[in-house]
Length: 136
Image (tube, rainbow, N blue to C red; front, side, top):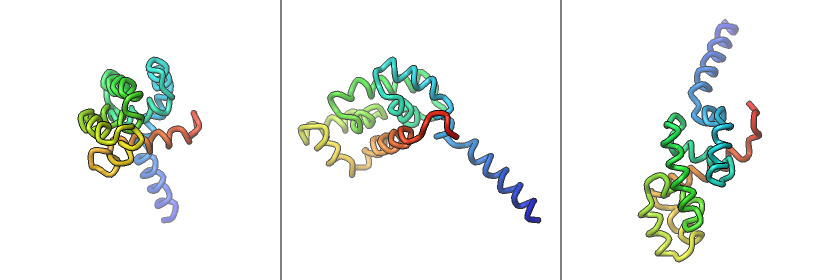
């Protein structure tokens, strides 16, 4: 009985692990390195933006998100640029205009519902940066 439960647990664990979008993104690190180099970004940024676009999004959709992020990063800062890349450019610009600089704008905006893409981007970027390549 215990052996059957163990096998059932291991199968469930394997199935659940196979559904992980994080691991799916991590498996395509080589593509992320190429995209990061093309746009002059750290690899963990490209991987976090892949999560923002959707782990199973087309490569062109992912590159579009990366392009918008890279184009807005200098003006808006990392978090607000991620919000802009997720379709919230108007809200990000409005926050920047109200605060005057990207750091204060993010501090004020991060409590708004529209800040979720930026918060997710920052969390995923940190998570990808902390993980060593090729580790399972």
